[in-house]
Image (cartoon, rainbow, N blue to C red):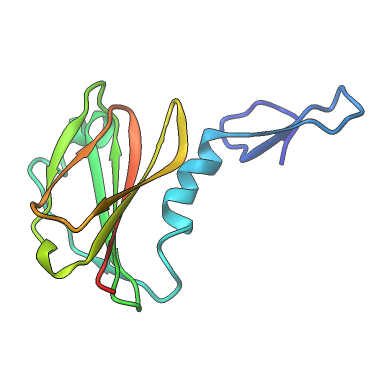
Length: 139
């Protein structure tokens, strides 16, 4: 918590007022895409995609990580640094999952949820300049 608008703050407060005004930051919501859905004891799943180690991808591309929770759910977090939406083709047995839910954080949304239902294909859209978390549930 900080009264100063530094990039590393999670929550800001207005030190010039007596009413205790508090403001959230995008960094707080960004961390929520990981902390809220990747549970203690989760295992990291290897993710492979084209050009993932190129400097351009790391600085301005799409970054993807995946985890398997102890309850069998799979969590995929995609950070899209591009100015355009991208389609991800996930190579997983999506038919074995009963429900997929996405959570999006971008300029206008903070962990906005959307139930995608039972997956039919392995293609999922990630909006421009956003972080999207996909939760694949088998139960």
